[in-house]
Length: 181
Image (cartoon, rainbow, N blue to C red; front, side):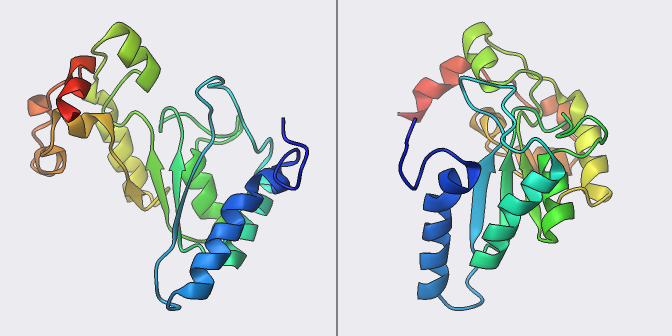
């Protein structure tokens, strides 16, 4: 664990990214969009919650809003999992609510398994959660959705979804990663 200005507290661990955002804002036009991607989980700890309360998350976000971030890209293991027990909002939903800025949700979109499980056990795709995703978008929980592994199997994912052709979505298989070389 670090014991300098970039280690220890959440504020210190956020300092490097905050310094970068401030430097970008200082060197770009005021209307230049700055997006910050952050994650609620860690590969070695899927249950990690850097912000135990909405108040802690709000303090974290506030520093970045003040520094000039325009949109937050909120990564979590599974987009459908709530960030806090007493709410159905996910990380992107809470981020939008607390920051007042647009947010992007990402995490196992059209997949039933997380990345490591898919790699270890193969195909676990499931398009059944797409209805929930669309409902959340329509209810303004978040503004955009990011898609990862599903795009490896379906470069035309957005077109298929827009046309309602969910049955045509091909499952992601770990072997597909070798085609990315």
